[in-house]
Amino acid sequence: MARTTKGRIYTRTSKKHGKVYWLDFTVKGKRFRHKLAHPNGDPITRKKDAEVEADRIIAPYLAKSETERRRRAADALRAAEEVAEAAEEAARPKLLLSDTWGKYPYDHTSRGKLKNGSRKRRKLSKRTVTDNKSHWNKFVKWYADTHKAPCCVDGVTAEDGEHFSAYLRQDLGLTNNRHNKILLTVGVVLRQATGENPLADVDLYDEQEQTVSHVDLEPAEVLKAINATDGELRRLLLIGAFTGLRLGDACQLTWEDNVRFPKGEPPEIARRTSKSGAYVRFPVHEWLLQDLLMTPKADRQGPLCPAYASRYLNGNQSNVSAKVSKVLRGLDMTTRRDREHGQRRAALRSFHSLRHTFATICADYGVPLERVQEWLGHSTVQVTRIYQQRRKARDGGKVLGALTEAFAGEELPAFVEPAATDPAERRDRDRFRVLADTLPIEQIRAFLADR
Image 1: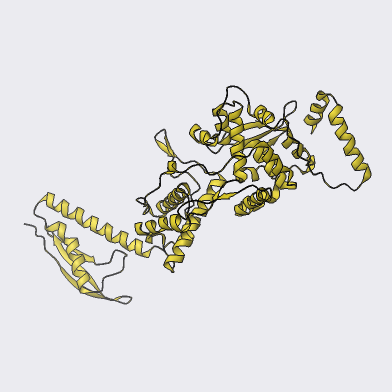
Image 2: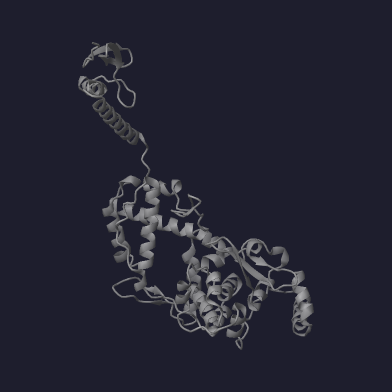
């Protein structure tokens, strides 16, 4: 009967490694000699390690039944895989928190919708990616300040998540909504980098308990703010008042992508929605049109507000917002109000108030809720209803008509013209104003179409 032995270990001398261990054993009469090595391929030079490896190799062959042999072989294979994974993990370079965003940016939806059996991830807008990066950097800075040592991404724990949550609420006094957004963003980045989210069990706060902090401005207050500014800031306020766009979207409007002068039709601003990627077209109010037409045709390229677009894209969003708040404070409008429980002061009036004003006017003059939702880019009509908090909508009407009627009777803003030192230029400008008031509307429309 062919025999099977437990084998024996012995040594051979290697020029490179010195004394190394081998295994000599027999299986069903057939003799084998096997060089013993670690999972990383290095030869074994210690007797204790050699005995462990020899037992692992021979164990399947000493089984008394086929079932036992297979079980032992499976156990040996699983143990070898675990050892190999551990060795691979130990050899893998550690990824620092400060380097994680560069390798695993949160610039796509974390979990796409199922389509034809596969998941499709949607690319996020530049504004959203900028916000996500800001949230992640806030976490990295907090971790560095509290741990006083470089940390790898796989070293973040659930306890860190609890402490970070307390920091956001108690030290920074953030709202429920902002607290939740930051935690969710950090969790997504950690899951992308490590496959796990240690912040998954950190409690989120009920966002429904929070009320809208901003108040909408009356038309007279809007015009007062517009008349108190000039240049790009004036244009930015006009865009906010007559389009309802968020500050970031308003700053990033460009002549090429967003402003259109179709022949025979009213000028329009078109924007791509972040939800569907489709263009939504919107007619330009006459006051905003006046400001846009002051830009010579040859200069209509790039952002509508170049200076503010540059500041916003370079991460100076608070600087842009502060400019608007400064104008409102100069007009004796309260821009902040205190919160309870020591939280930081909440915004009361800011550029975002123009968005509320836009939605309120639309509600006031019966613009369909779905139309306002589409233009403002809200995911649900419930969000739009929050913006339309003060008044009840009546049936009928359109967005542009609503804005025109809401501002009817108000004094047109005194637009600042480019400085003209040439008397002939000033005279021609005065003649043009007279023509604008006296020419038939068909000729004026033809002129605008040519521009």
